[in-house]
Length: 154
Image 1 (spheres, rainbow, N blue to C red):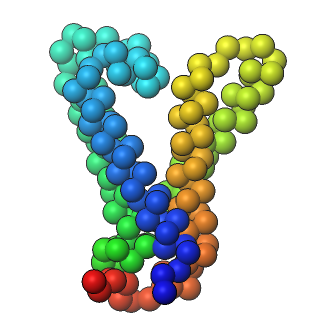
Image 2: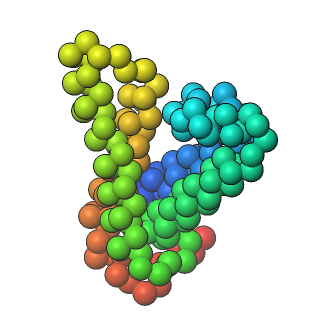
């Protein structure tokens, strides 16, 4: 029987791959996507002027998110055990969660009549969900994550 933590880690991994794919799509869409996803006007203008920098930086971010996806799947036992698995899963969960807790500041800004784009709240909530998936999955699978052979045979 599969541990419930495995399901959380699998969810985190799949969502990390979705975030990686989104970053690749941003490269192809260009300046308007950089603006929409709050990368900054500098990145948008650089993309408009034909600079390779926004695409290269976004591709690096996509690779990081894809790597995090592999760590989620590794923790879930879907693929082989990756190095420093426990530490990596905790750090990945912490990064996503720290990004996600911005939602509380955003809600406070709404209450105090400051403008916050609804999409910013969605981005924060998505990060929070992914981070919690990694952290819950890691904590509930902690003992099994120490096993040397984690490949699930089909």
